[in-house]
Amino acid sequence: MLKFRQFFLVLPVLPVLSYLALLLLLAIISATETAIHMARDLDSQLSSARAGVARKLRRITANPFAQLHRTLLLSATLNLALAALGLHLVSGPMLALGWNSWLAATLLFVGTVIIGDMMPKFLAARSPTAVLVGSLRLLNPLRSILDPIAALADRSTDVLIRRLIPQRVKMRQPITRDEFETLVEMRVEQGLLDAAEAAMIREALEIEGLTVRDCMVPRVDLTLMSAFDKPEKTTATLEQSAERYVVVYGETPDVVEGVIDTLAWRLAGRPAWANLLRPATFVPETMPVLDALDAYLKNTTQPVLIVDEYGGLEGMVSQDEIADWLLYEAAPWQGEGAEIRDLGNGRYLLEGGTRIDDVAAALHISFPDTDGLDTIGGLVFNILGHLPKAGERVHLDDADLKVRRVVRARVQQVELRLKKPFTEDIDRQ
Figure 1 (cartoon, rainbow, N blue to C red):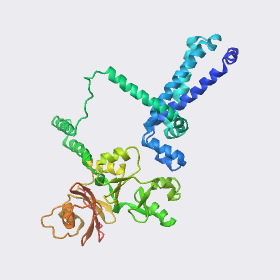
Figure 2: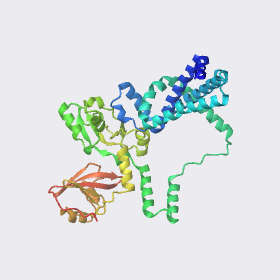
Figure 3: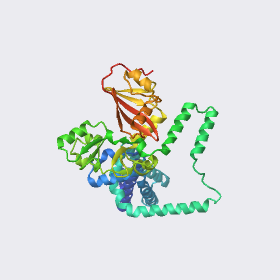
Figure 4: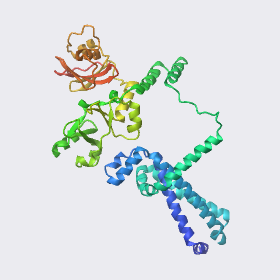
């Protein structure tokens, strides 16, 4: 006990306090580094955050790894400072008290690792979002200092790599689509892939040629809400919306004011909708899906709105719609044996390639003269007289048809609504 009292009396106060302060900062940086790697989606925090904090959170959501260079620089700096201070304490005051230098260094090292590294990382692993939000106050004021240093370190690393690696050593070019398809065919021939697996892979590759129009939710299926509606009407619209996002418009539906996330609205306790209105992002209907993903949808669930050449609203697409398209094409719903899916309330989802005779027999309805036509998609195409767009409708005697999905020049899905309810079950085989 006497030795410990002498320890605290002999040790200089300033180096000890400095060591403890640096250790606390290291703990914060270690937790932040772990949180950056684990936090993926901060949208749930945006509705409850203050305006200033919300802007910072959106910046992190757009690219969480932008903070990583800052944390690594701070971590390296703090570790060097702690090592220097620790060496001073071990070789000076602690040695003067009669401590064994190896024992003192070991205890100091173990304590630093536990307090400054292990415990903060365990905490960040349990609550990454809270840790990341709390670290904003430390990292953001240091951006002007750390970012230039990080950029200099990147440039220095590039120069060093070019000096050390010979010119003849080249990075292998990414595999092309043709090479990948050839590789798939080889694996099929070798028996490493079956035909169904190969077909799924080829379907997944088709996304390369798609535009946002191919995957969008058409305008007719969007939930639209006027900014001039009375509060009770807007509340009812948000409450009853079958879609997650509601588009708010001004004078006309083509004058979009923004988008409301109904899930965030409900979780926030159903506040005034204007508090959760997000500005809309617009893209042309001809934009490739992969470009939209890379530019707008990579790290956010916020949708983008599709407009035509005149600025008219055509539809909406988000990560969910693109994932639905990809999963639907690569791994279709297992209950589609008869290509007729019962949606309830007299509504059925038909594949574009479903035979007209099969639909007529299954639902006990009749179709107009279909000489030369075999499929539902062909029937819709023939009646409209042009390549349909998602959302277009065809009215028949016994049912109404609505185009649900069109890819390139092919009608893939059609929704059929009976004018007279049919109660028998559809044979799904």
